[in-house]
Image (cartoon, rainbow, N blue to C red; front, side, top):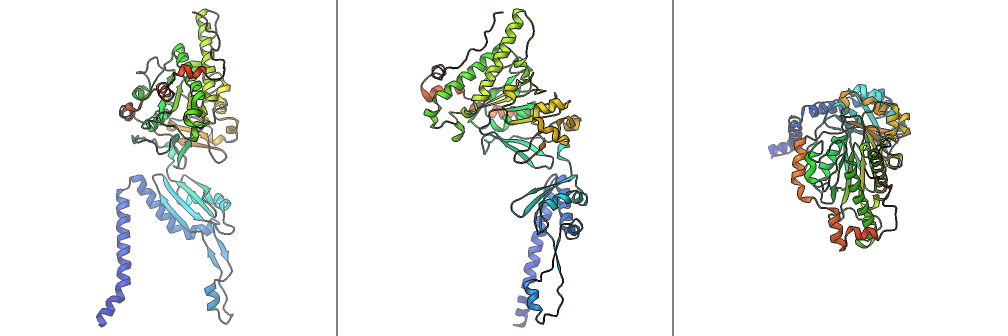
Length: 473
């Protein structure tokens, strides 16, 4: 009996030892299976936890509590014992990832968000990080992001999943300078402008967007590429099977296709309330029969170029370019609620490349590397002058190929983003596997309504559809 009581006495220690062994094994397995960068972050996370109690007071992130606890008051029955003040330190929860650590902490009286921001440079040095950011993480909490390796200079590759996006019109752009994923909601957005020097990632950015959205039957694509003459050429060649139409650098062909798209826009406007039961398509969202029409326009200045000359051919080209600008303006200003998303892409988003009546209505703008401050302002607005560290003129180094700047949604300032590269083989595979999802939006609308697009467009309120007279060659 005495031996049995002794055995039960050791039971708590045995259970504790077993839990410790299991936890250690899980930790070792996770460490061994991690990538080399993740292992370095795991070691960094251990160091952050181990040194925090000593580091926090030195960084001004502690507070002295002179009030005795309830248990201390009960123990001091005669009232003669001197109470020793307690030093309170914020509790931490540390999570490692590829680039560094995510540290969540609770606030204390006189140790809040501002105090953590002031201490960020000291924490970066102590944690051996390139930089540390501090953001609110709910009432009474902060989120500190420490990056050991600068995510902006680490090229990344994106492997498309081939699965439909969980949320339509959600654009996963890349990761910011703290390794945090950056997503942009393009719901109810009329257009996006993308600028930057040649070879710095503009077309690659579009390739990723198309690859991620291609598995959804509720999205259809019609690119315009001003760099090539035929669909099988250039950067979008591998994605051609997933496009319901394509246009190269021919101004007349672009004019005809833009007129068809504007006609589809007018037809949708006529019948949307009857077909969808709403005045804004985004109230019900895109569908297979009423898809979102994405219109990337690469090297868009090709279609808007102001041709100078008095000969008949030049006059015709000038008239075509002016009409193209008018038609794109129609899509950007009137197509948002009807399911059109236009994406003008060019090197310098100045007024001569993208007319200001189109550029200035774009709520979302991105810019890769730029050579001049004027080009940066044209792409991102006047506010970029107040944030010189984030200006795209600082991205001209080859290490920043694939890095873009955009305004930070939900907070002041701008964010720099490392956009991933999609290899051509992956793009070709996705396009081939999703080619069966291509449906002509003109045919879909006719199936929904029993009328042709031309008949529906004629029922729309009178608008100036013909534009400037196209002079005969």
